[in-house]
Structure formats: C-alpha cells, structure tokens
Length: 145
Image (cartoon, rainbow, N blue to C red; front, side, top):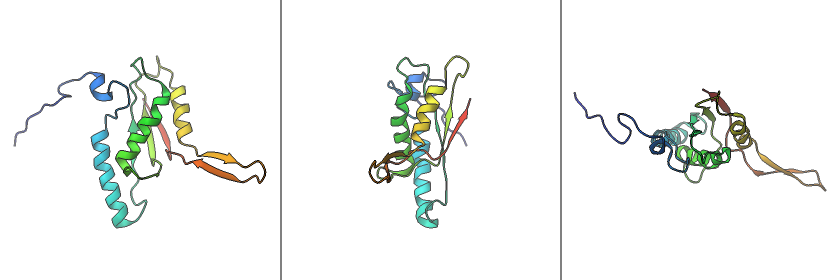
C-alpha cells in the first residue's frame, strides 16, 4: 500500500499556518471535531459523562500579538469543537503546552486559565444568596513543557 504525503504542513510549516494570524486557531481543530463527535455519540449511547476528554491548548507565545486574554476565545473554540455549538459543559481537562518556560513567563497565562476554571459568582448583599452568573469553562488544568 502506498499513499501520498503532502499538504499545507508538509514537510514543515510556518507558525501562522498552525495558529492563524491572530493566534486564535487551534492546531488540533480537526482532531477535536472528530473526538467531539465520538464523545457526543458515547454520551447518547452510554449515558452522560461515560467518556471524558483531555484537550490541549498550545498558544503561539512567539507572536507579538499574544496576550493571555486571547485564551478565552480559544477555549470557547475548543469547547465548540468537542461539545457542539449549544453545549455549556466545561472542558473535562485542559492541558497547556508551553513552548519556552525559560524565556517566556507562563504565570499570566496560567492565571488567565485559572479564571476560566472558576465559576463567576455574584452574592446578593441583602440575602447573602450566591448565584453563579457564568459557569466555569474548564474542569481541570495541567501544564506541560
């Protein structure tokens, strides 16, 4: 069996092709869509939560336009790829791949991701009742370099 090897990423590519010019593209977008279809099918056939997924975010920290607040849009795109347009489910687990921990500070990015992993809560001053105004978008976080 033979097959042709080629395409826009063969044998090498530039970072813009992987991440987009505005750093909001996910290099795993096609795989996320396939995994999302698989998860939704498993949830339908075996019950909600039968399969949990690990998603990976790989921001292009070498691009001048990179800012940690870009991650919220990227996480939303990953959630849509995995769970569909209408789902409000948080990602089961999100792994951050950091290219260069020695020369680029990872802490602002981790803080931005931490905000996405917490429910936004509003407390009524009079009654003391807490209400979730925006649910978390990420269930668990991990870091790899």
